Image (cartoon, rainbow, N blue to C red):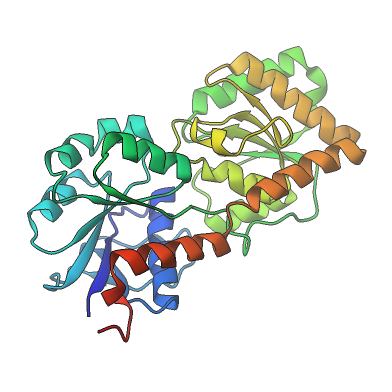
Length: 316
């Protein structure tokens, strides 16, 4: 029986890519597949989220292991291409990041590295353009409904500015200058927060400033929508898959002036309350329902049943 081995390249920093890897393996085990994460002996696993994924460290690969390599692990992609055994590429990067990372290696070894897992339908379409002969399996990422849900709302905003620290400062300064009434909104910054801390902050926050940038999906903003936040800001390109005029106040990429106005609109909506606010929140919750853990499990099981039915425990 084959074993599915996801490479976990980690320095224990907060990174959405690590979360997806751990959730893949955790769910595969629950679905009856033989699956593990593989980390170097001297690296610590992520501690910023709770998970049940088995992790092996520094062990040699078995002859029948199916190696799953993240697209940004360029040296590991080269190693996988030299193996005689099956390898799969877990691609989470948007086109710009892929171009700056693993694209050249993947193109060089396109015959050997020809099976991909993507994280969204639009992401799969991009990969099909780049690798027309590859097998692309879509396993949607998810706003985990087990964690991210509305709580008792306060008059606060929440943001994760890691990718757009300068824009976050500019948007808030412009919003205060042009819309002084927005100044009484309290803010929670979530850089370096654990997944549980982010879920707690989103549950109580009324507004989320979306600072997505060059995303394949924009998972943080989806988690805010699932938590009942009114969102304003950037889609990060990948968020165009779910952003509509009904579920947020979205602006063109890098337009901080427009984002300041959008943020003021979101704050005014929350302050006014009533039916208009309920409509936005309900639209956001309905959007998040299209990106659930339950749907992810269905995608994951279907994908791996096609890729490696022999990795299911009890398979012959």
